[in-house]
Length: 575
Picture (cartoon, one colour):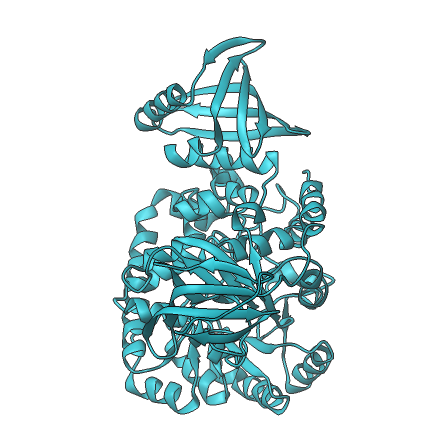
């Protein structure tokens, strides 16, 4: 496992980041007013240091030192907010050994270190996709290092964190860790002890993992939950709660939850619950896609969404087909059952989806504050690249595009008490802004049309922000190959790519010929899959020992990739 490449990349990129830019003038841009549900056309916006200083329809006269961006026919939204992530999890198949224990094949200690190593890489991926604020709603005490040190020394979104989750249940996989992400709390005294330890780190909010069932009814632990809520509110903090069934969610709100970080997925919400949410001003985060992504990874069948193939950390995403490597003798019985009957999982997902989407529409129509959150870091839900997928899932509930944009900006800020700083475009607020070439109110997919991101008054060159290493580029190519996505696959290759058989027999001399050859293979060859057995990285060269399945045939091949200017320029096969 080579993990040093991430740190090397970070040093190079960070040395070029200079802090606040000179003042910026956005001219003649269409401002999406998320607070009032309107588009203010042809606005001029002056940014000074890290704040928005003026918004007007009138001309703003500036001197030559001000950077000017022509916003004609473009659209401006506030930086988006992911209200539900976990930095201690990477999104890989190996990141939750309590869900599927593969530690005999892959060290969990290595996974924990990997999660730490890629945090700066995740920062850049979030920013590239217009996500300028993230809330880590539960993890080890290392979370505070992420916020107070790592985020301060790297270009990053605004990072808000809490420490370990208060929980009536602790997965065995976490019990032996030195820095525990989920603490089992059996009494008010234990809750107070953990709270007092955490408060010294100045958490931005508190999180309870309100698990019920299996002999542990929610009513039994309710007094502890209410006690934690009391401690939280006495310290002027917000309480976030994981509660996925209606009965437990009601108890969470009764106890004092300010934010529910998951959908109710066991039954349709009733009028009593809606009234409780309204009366207590509770924010509801649907978190729709995370559950399904576990099952997809267990079956080595990820969605292969273009956002993941293009923007996910390639090494993380590459693990989501790793279950192809394991025989039935190496996996838990419940995964064996899924392999034999994958349609049972699809049926369960359809039922839960229907409940969650119906609840989302009903709560939106009733005026409940809805915020967008992904639960990124869980198996199959990748940091940053999962965000648009969550938005697409929300759209299936038939809520409006404006409702979704609000959920991703001002509603999220309101839910966490941050509306004075972020979430909308107003004078005095932090200049966290996203410039789009297309109108997202007309089509929510236009959130993908990012031209530029401004973070705290700094113009980010999003084309240069994330420069992937040769290893990452090659792995992205492997991911696209396994997904049979010809466009994502060819995007990793240079226009003048050459393919050789060792030592120097030219077999393909143009990108067009290469695309034609692989397109045919993707269409016609069943069970196509490439597994990397070994990898060596030497400067711009990546040497892979690949085990490739073509239908019923198998092939072992050594492949030498040479990367130039961010693209694969030369490939040599040793067969």
